[in-house]
Length: 235
Image (cartoon, rainbow, N blue to C red):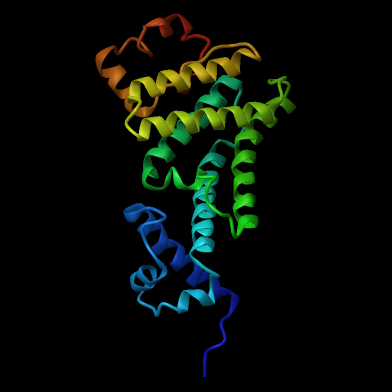
C-alpha cells in the first residue's frame, strides 16, 4: 500500500526536485532537459515527480521562486537603517552585484518574461518580497526624516538599473570596471533627488584600487575630497 505523504514529506521532495532542476538549468538551460532526465537525476521513476508537480513548467516556476527567495534573504541583510541614503543604496548595490556573480548560472532565467507562468502565485509572492527588500531600508530612512522621495520608485529604479547592468556584465559585454562606473552613475542620479553624492565600488575593484592607489577611492582620484562626507562603504 502506498504510504500517505505528510506535508513535510511533500515539502522535502519538492525541495529535492527544485535542487535537481536547478542543477540541470545551470548545465543545460531551462529548455535543455526533460522530466525523464530530471527523474534520473533524482533516482526516481519518471512518473514520481508528477505526484508533486503538474509538469516541467511548474517546476521551473518553483525554481525561479526559490531564486528570488535567496536574493531576498541576501538583500534583507541591508534592512537595518543606516544614517544616509548614499550608504543604503551603495550597500544594496553591493549585495546585488555579489549575488548575481555567485548565481550567474541562474541569473537570466528568472527574469525571462517569455516563459509561461504556472505556479505564478508563489513566483509573484517572491518577486514582491524582492521589491520590498529594496524598499524597506529606504522607507525606514524616510520615517526618520532622512529621505523625502518616493521610496518605492527609488527602490524599483535601483533594482532595474542593477539588473540591466549585471546582465551585460555577466554576458561579457561590460567590464567589471565599467560595471562599477555605471552603477555608481545610476546611484548618484537617485541620490541627487535627495541631495548628496556617492561612488560605488565592488569588493574586487576596491582591492585593486587600494593596491594601485592606496590613497584614493575611485578611478579619477576625486574621492579624496569627498572622504569626509561619503560613507566608507560606499566607495
